Each structure stands twice: as structure tokens, then as C-alpha cells.
Image (cartoon, rainbow, N blue to C red):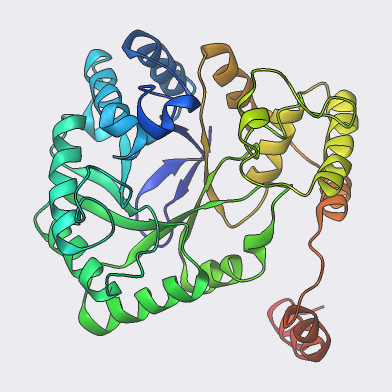
Amino acid sequence: MRYNKLGSTGLYVSELCFGTMTFGGQGPFGFLGQVQQAEADALVAKALEAGVNFLDTADTYSEGHSERITGQALKNLGVRRSEIVVATKVFGPAGRGPNSHGSSRGHILDAARASLERLQLDHIDLYQLHGFDPATPIEESLEALSDLVRQGLVRYIGVSNWAAWQMAKALGLSALHGFAKIASVQAYYTIAGRDLEREIVPMLQSEGLGLLVWSPLAGGFLSGKYTRAQREIEGSRRTAFAFPPVDPERGYDIVDALAAMATRKGVTVAQLAIAWLLHQKTVTSVILGAKRVDQLSDTLASVDVTLDAEERKLLDEVSKLRAEYPGWMMDIWSKARVEQFAAQRHPR
């Protein structure tokens, strides 16, 4: 297990993060998993044994039960607080009232204290806005998060599922008003879904933000179970709920390439898909979810999978994005300047 800095902060997190969305089995997220306390303890123990020091949850997972089970697992396992980085999120529904969701000051402050109580912790290491709230000014949200940082209840702040322009605006407002700076974004990214490379990745590289990847197997599409011949699996989550969306024809081209390479290397398709992410320089940590210890053991082993230059080139080629404007124009119009800059930084 390797450890990466979270954006431009001094905090190091494991390159694999254990996500607890499968804990609890209640409410709208209940179909994702029914993991209860004893099973959760075993999963968290396995992750820690492998060197994971980073856990991710959210107040809306299983109506708060995911946080509750996560906190109790840390207590049951006797994990020292200084040895674990705990991330959670606010934004989704936490009740039935009109102010029980979103990123308003009131909801953020109430939700943070509720999360701390469920997690049985005195602070949250990374507190993330789980979505973009068009009803609340970004300044209001940032000020509330900054107050939590000043109070010692939160160490770092982040966002999830935001567009590049929204993050850029938030960074500008933080610099202008002295608010806490966003440290990271949690976003969907897979070899079968590389859309964030268009705008978000360049912004992260420019501004020094960390990237936490959710659903690295594209909701099971890259698990190795789905092929051109086996497009549906009875009882599987993806068969019932095809999320995140994947272009099937392009997706199966990628699965074919992964499967052939996995056979040659003696690894699983899932391990290879995660290893591809770990080879992307922008990625800080990849969030793994699991219902069983054997599932988690398989994906944890992805840290041992290496890709040489030819293998990376093959996978990049089969999964590359179609050029879109203004990207293709920038590639053409800025080519000479890019080459000039590269030559300056790396003299031949």
C-alpha cells in the first residue's frame, strides 16, 4: 500500500480507501448492501490489515446507519484515532423537512454534529459537500465549513460531483474571503468513464486538488462478470440499476481488452481496472466498496498489479475519449506552444 498527499495539504491517505456505502441496508441506499455490524467489523479489519488508513461514508447512506456502523467498527477494533482518516459527506436528505438537505449553513452545521455523534468521533478528517446546491450561495456553504474547521470539528473540506467551473469559483471565493480551501473532489472515474479528463482533471492539476474516485468498477460493469455474451446477471445490482451509465459497445471493447490482458498477467479484470486508475497521476485514492471479505481481498490486491508502458498504451487507446470542442481546437492551435514549453522544461 502506498500513501499519497491529499491535494496540496500535508495529510497522507492510502491509495485505496474503504467505502462503507454497503453498511446498514436501509432507505434508498439499502439495495446496495445489507452489511451489519459483525460483517462490517470484519471488512474494516481486512482493509486496515492491508494498510488502508482511509474510510469514506456519508450521512445519507442507509439513513445514517452506515456512519453509525462505521464508527462502532472503529471502536470495536480499537483503532487509534490518529491512525485513521475518516471522511463523510453532507447534502443528501437527512430528514423530511425542507431544510433537511442541501448545503445551507443551517443544514451543514446540524448535519456535522449529527455525523460526529453517529461516528462517535470528536472530529471529521474530511468533510465533503456531496453535491452542488443551486439554491445556496457557495459563499454560505464555504463559510459554514470554515467555521467547522475553526472549531476543530473538521480538519479538511472537499466536494463531490461538482463541475470544474464550480470548484474554480469556490477556490476563488476562498482566496478572496479567507475561507477554508477545498482539498479534494470525489468523482466518478473509470477506464470505461473518462469524462472528467476533459475539464476536471486539468483544473485539479492546475489548482493542486486531490481526486478521490468512486465506483471504480463502474457499478460492477468492470467486475469481470459482464461480457458481450453475458450482459445481464440475475440478482445483480447493475442488472436492476444500470448506474453509472456506460456506453455498452465502447464498454465491451474495453472489457475485452481488460479480460485478455488479465488472463496474460494472471490477475482479475477488477484488479486490472483498479490498477489502471492507480497509474493515473491525478488520482489520490480509489474508494472500494464490498459486501464480503473475499470481494474486498480481491480488489485490495490491485495495488500489486503493475502496468508497463505498452499495456498502458493499449488500455488508453481502447478507452480514449472522442475529441470534443474546444479540446480538439486547443490540441491543434496550442500544439507549437505546448512543444516549446515542454522543450524548455525538459531540454533535449
